Image: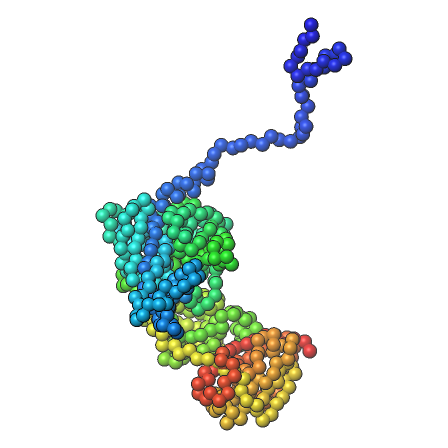
Length: 513
C-alpha cells in the first residue's frame, strides 16, 4: 500500500517530501509593523464634528436689472447673464417676443460663513452678500432658513458681519491667533462648495503674507493653503489642527474654475479687528496720510536719493495730511511713529491701523538730510474717495532739437511751449523721450518712448543741455534715478488739458560702457 504524505509526491518508487522552508529570502530585512492607531487619525473627524454646527450656508438673492437690447430684447446687466445661459441650452431668448418692460431677473449666490457669537453673529465674505436684496442662512442639520441682517461690511478686506435671530443658543467657533501660524501647519477648510453643505477638506498652510496684487487687495496679506477650496467655500473658516479659526476662506487661483490647490484665506487677526469695529460703529475706519509710493522696491532708486531703506514718495495728494505736514514728492519716509519703515506694505499696514486723528511723528529723508514731521492721520475712505486719478502722459509732437543720450541709450528732444500746451503739460521743464534703444540701460529700467524726462538724480531737466551735463558727471556703477511723466492713454496730441500726467520714478545702476 502506498502511503501519501501531505505535500509529498511518489516518483519512481521513491517518496519525495517537500520540506518546510527554514531559510528566509531576505534575512537582513526587518519586518514592517503596523502601529496602533494614533490621535492624528481621528483628529480631523473630531474637528469636523466639533465645528460643523458652527459653520453655516449663506444664500444671497440678487436682483439683476434688465436693459432693452436691439430688436426689442431685454438682457441682464450681470456678467453671468441667466438669459445667455437660457439661450445657450435652449437656443432661444425667453424675453425675445415679449413686448414692453419686463421684470428684473433674480439670481442666487451661495457661500459659507461661521458663527462667532452665541447671539447669532456670523462672519462671511463681503462678496457673498454684496448687492443682495435678501440674505438667508441655513444651519447645520436644521431645515429652517433664517433671514440675516447685514450689520456692516468691510470691502477692503472683503468681510461682512451678519446677524440672525434663532430660538436657540448658537455654538460659536473658537478664534485662533493667525500670527502664530507657520508654513507646513495643518489646515482644514469647512464650507459649502458648489452648495454641498458641511464639506470638509484638509491640507497644509502653503505660504504666509501672500500678496496677490491689485489695489483692491492692498490690505489683504493672505494665508495660502492647498486644502481644497472651491466656489461656495467663500466666507467659511480655515482651521488649525486644534479647531481654532485662523482664517476666512476668500478666493482661489485656478485655471479650471475649481480647486488647483492654491487657496487664499484672510488671516483671522485682520478679520477680528474689522469685526470689532463693525459691531461697535457699523463700519471700519482706517488711517491714511495721502501719498502714492513706488510699489516695486528698487534699491537703486533709494540709493540715488541717499537712502538704503524706506518708502519713496512718488506723489503727495494736495489737501491731505501728508501735504499739510510738508511731505514732498521725492522724500523717503524712513520711520513712522518712532519705528523704522521697511517698505510700502509695512507703511500701509501701520498707517491703516493708526486711529484717525492721531498725530504721529514721521521721519523723512530729503536731499540727504533727515527731517522730523508730525502728521495727523486722516480717514482712508475719505482720502481715497477724494483722490482724482488722472492718466499718464504719452508721446508728444516732435521737438525742435534731437539728441542721442548714448550713455543711457535713448533719444531726447526739447519741447516747445506751443507743443507743451497742445500736449496738456503744465508750464515748466522736461524733455521728450523720442526713442529708446533696444537692450539699453534706459529700456532695462523701464523708460518708454513718449515719456517726458523731468529730472535725473533729483536734478531738474529743462533742456537737452541739462541731460548732457548730468550724464557727463556719471560713471559706470553709479545709481541713476529718473523722474518721468507718463500717460496711460498713449498719444495725447491735440487733447489739451484732457491729458493727465502722472510721475513715474525709474532707477538702476549704470552699466559699464
